[in-house]
Length: 119
Image 1 (cartoon, rainbow, N blue to C red):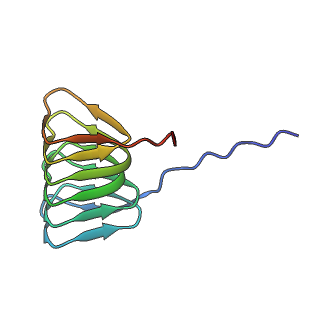
Image 2 (cartoon, rainbow, N blue to C red):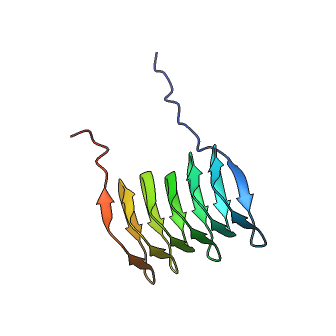
Image 3 (cartoon, rainbow, N blue to C red):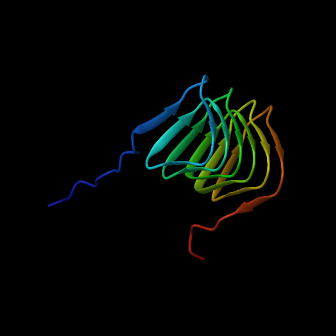
């Protein structure tokens, strides 16, 4: 009679780059990722990206959703949402549909909001 509505679970965390990891080059992750390392290159993540407080990314970032507590020197583009947690440092432009900036963040750049409502 009534069909139970299915809720899509977020993809599991498939990639973790720890504090002792340094990467020079582009990274592509199909799924979610947590980065606590230093990266010099583009970062492309198909789902959720978590940037830990000790992480440093020098390059552009593309993802579906992002939670950022570390440092990024480059443009950050998310299809849906970006949350800058306390201590986040962004030197570059942000593009997303939803943006949350908590206290004690640094953001220098432009912000472009994406309209996901189709209007």
